[in-house]
Each structure stands twice: as structure tokens, then as C-alpha cells.
Length: 323
Image (cartoon, rainbow, N blue to C red; front, side, top):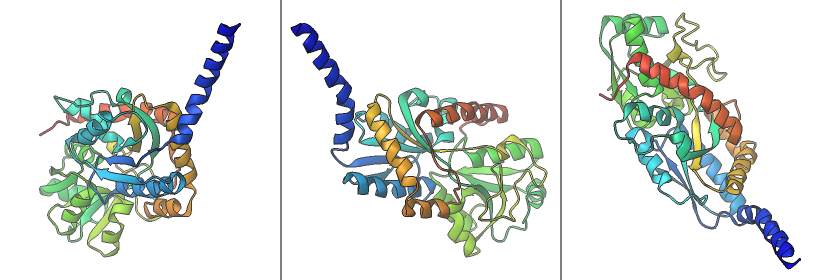
């Protein structure tokens, strides 16, 4: 009888332990380690949700930029941290997906196993942007110009959307685009604004002020549909270019080191869900032209599983490699 009573008490304790853990979390500041430089869509998303999490938990959320290395610098920093719910990765999914294909030595060779995926945020529309004095204002004018002369496209890394768009144009449309890689969207956009490069692919939020001042010009949307923020801006498909790289979907990923207690992951996902409908986050989403709410936990994991082979197959088909 005593053994049975002890077993029941032990089982009850195990059942309530996850709840107690979630209630006591966080016990110190939370780190969001960003795989891109400050100033881009990831930075804005991480800070907007971080402020809400701080309000709800009383613990500060620190956004720490660790750009470079195909997102592996940030990924390694998070994987090396204890899975106790105080260090998380914010990265662009395409970079994590491409790293095993592009790097000979990969710090995190299987991101889908090294991380528990908690949330996926739409980065908003991906805009094809050109410097203000480039004599091209439509996708077709740009393709014709890039066939006639060499142009430079900036990307946020090997295998990124901009890189694949440039490689696809060169291979399938006969353009002459040279790719220059940056550690984040912000420095690429700044170089575009001063005319160092001719074009890039950027988010609405990251490029809005430069577009409004006339220093850079959007000529198309490189994702699947138009954006309500720029309703007259065509997609590449609208202009007659239906190639795969013009229809890619990407995500901003919030992930925890594998093995993070499910109670904590669920609690953070719940805070993300709650925060999405707060005025501050709504304002941040509107500034990024994001209309979709984030996907959470299992739903997001399923979406990633569908998108991962699309990016990887296109990378192989275009022969994208580390130069």
C-alpha cells in the first residue's frame, strides 16, 4: 500500500512539474539571437514581440545580432546554450535550409533536428528594388537592361532569395548579374541607395523610408502575390515571368535548442499568439506590410517541411555554390 501511495504521489508530482516550470519561467533575461544585422525584418519582429514578452513576464528580452556564416554563427551560439528556455534563435529559414548544401563544414548540419521550431513569421512582401537612376521601371525593362550590360545585385547571403533570383535570371533569362553578398538587408539597402549596387531584394519594412525618399525604386514583387501597401506594383508573374524563384515563400523563424521543455515552448508560443493582437505588434506588422499571423509549433513545423525541399531543389538546379 505504501509503495502504491508513493507511486501515485510521484506520478502526480511529474504531472504538475511542467506546469510549475512554465509558471516560474523566465527566471532571468531572455536572449533572442538574430542571424542578421540590426535594422532588418528579423530585428523589427524580434523587438516588437520582445517588448510584449517583457511586459508579460517582467524579464527583459535582449536582441543580440550575430550575422554571418550562413546563419551558422547565430545557430551555433543558440545550440551551444542550455535548453532551458532563455536563449532562442531568430533567423531566416532559407539560410538555415541552405547551409547544409553550401558549407563544407556546417556547425549545425541538421537544423530541423537541432532546434524545436516555435513560430514562423511572414517577412512581408519581397520587393525587387533598383537604384534611383537605373533606367528600368518594370521587370521586362530590367531584364532587357541586364541582358545588355553587367549589373550588380546585392543579397543577404549565398542561397538567399536575392541570390536565387539573380542566379535564375542569369540561367533562364540570359541576364548578366553579378552577386555581392552582405551580412544583412540593411547594409545592402544602404549600398543600393548610394548606387554602389544596382538592385536587390528587400522587405517592405526595411526599404520603406528609402522608397519614400526616392533613393531606391521598387519595380516588382518577387513573392507570389501583390501587396496592399503597393497595389499597383506587379509581381514578376504578372509581367510574364513565372520562374520558381519569383514564387518562393520564406519565413522568419523563432526556434529553441532541441530539448527545451515543452511547457516553456508552449508558453512562449502562447505569448507570441497573444502579442500578435496587441497595438504595438499590429503596428509593427503593418509597417512590414504583413497581413498573415504567425504559425506556431506543429503547424509551423509542417509548413517548413513543405517549403524546405522547394528551396533546396532550386539551389541544386541553379548550381548555386559558395564563391
